[in-house]
Length: 417
Image 1: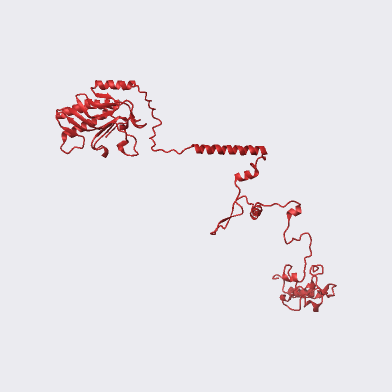
Image 2: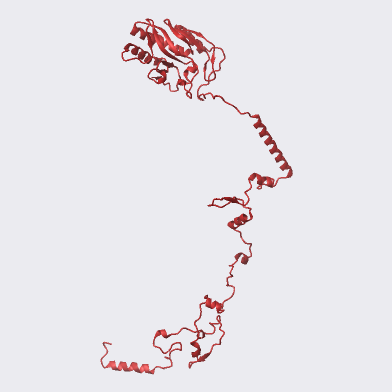
């Protein structure tokens, strides 16, 4: 409009006025729903009679609807009656239910109050679920599993009858329910077999008497070489050992076999009474031939020369404290059997020299130089002849004597303490 000449502006306004006046007044007539007010809120709610007849068929009214036709031929409700009409109620409201309103489309899509039964519609048998089946069993008292009630309370109890055991079930059914039923002959045969088995078991129980064990012998090493059976005839090794003893000048005699059970005894024992050089062994001890030979060599080659070197006198008497003895190590209960139990060990407590001096094996004082030197020398040299050497200082059980034995160890270890 800024580019329109100034003399055209009055002409344009005049043309617009002419066009507005030329419009028909009937077309611009407001509807009957709109009153003479100037606000939009003046639009009233739609009364029941203003809705077409086909739309309100589902909500019939007991009063007749009065209508009139306007100048355009359209049917409209009476003005006086429209002001007393009310709005349509909600379909699912209580007001619609009380007024007797019903849905127009009432057919096969109506859902019954109990729900839709698909099994009945399809013509099949109803399916019973696991939970429903177990619930029925519990209610009837026929549950296959134990049902416990009162959980969380002080009185916990089992509901229904207790489950039947397998043996009772088989007995009541006459056999295994998973197998074909047995005939009467098979049932009688199984019953007779069961009775015979029960009688045999009862007889075996009556025949067995309770065993009373006073002492169980110590188990031997299963990997050790089995011992030879005693026949009474001296083997060649024992005969050869005795020949060597005679060459060493040992005084001994054979004694009868010593047998105190499987853990104690000597098959071919000898009684040692003297050694070479006129050395007496008092009291005499019973040993096996092997340890006697080792002891005779130790006295001849170690003890006698050491005493002559330090005291200028030979050994006259050896006083042993023990030879064969059926006991455990250190005579303590629960310990393994000692080598003394097989005559394979000897204990020495004192030496008596030819000049009358007695040398006790006990630990010496501070100034007993010669005695300490002699005992240390013979104790150290004894490891060349024995597998185990114990004495004062080894443990409290050997504080007053020397212990010599020929115990065999798998590793060949010699214990000289």
